[in-house]
Image (cartoon, rainbow, N blue to C red; front, side, top):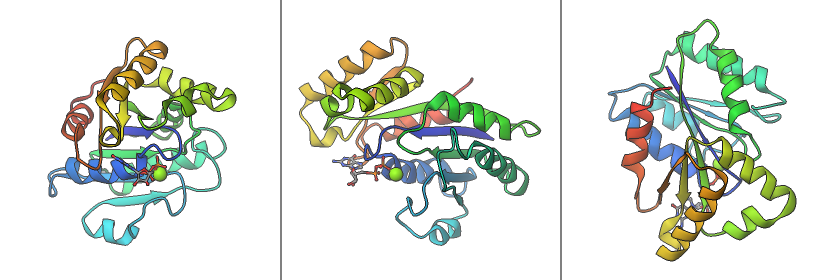
Length: 204
Ligand SMILES: Nc1nc2c(ncn2[C@@H]2O[C@H](COP(=O)(O)OP(=O)(O)O)[C@@H](O)[C@H]2O)c(=O)[nH]1
Ligand SMILES: [Mg+2]
């Protein structure tokens, strides 16, 4: 069971992406996928509808899975492993979550289970780089998320000029010299196949 998180600030496209990733990774029943979403009502479609396609969906509310409700998150991971044993668990943390803390909490849940970590994927919204990076408190949070990322996906590239994508990538690179940076549009599905491959092939 491999656990992959899709992190990033509120509104950067996590929920939209995670639903498409789930569909493509499952590949018509080829792989078992579970979703863990850290906000009640985040998934816009009825969880039951998604579950009919063979997926499990868990909602965790009441705080952030990387801090206040880390223990609940860990228990959810463990129960998923015991009851459903998916090949992939895709996690959408809240917009303020810190990826390495989400990883720690997930590992806690995997103590007696055979789990591995997928990449920490962080979305960076190409439509508002200045807003995300240049504000005091928010900027600190966003740069911490970027520093923790294995892969940064510059999201919503359908909505901006190519030069803005290049600028966003350059700014992200300043905070993380190692992460792979790629362009993503969940709307046009650009970059989606590449992310699916990264998740499936990822080795810790
Ligand atoms: N232009 C564009 N908008 C997107 C894309 N993905 C998501 N959005 C929009 O961005 C907003 C926030 O998306 P959501 O997935 O809820 O973000 P989250 O808060 O990170 O889960 C919604 O209005 C989406 O329709 C994309 O690829 N392109
Ligand atoms: Mg969301």
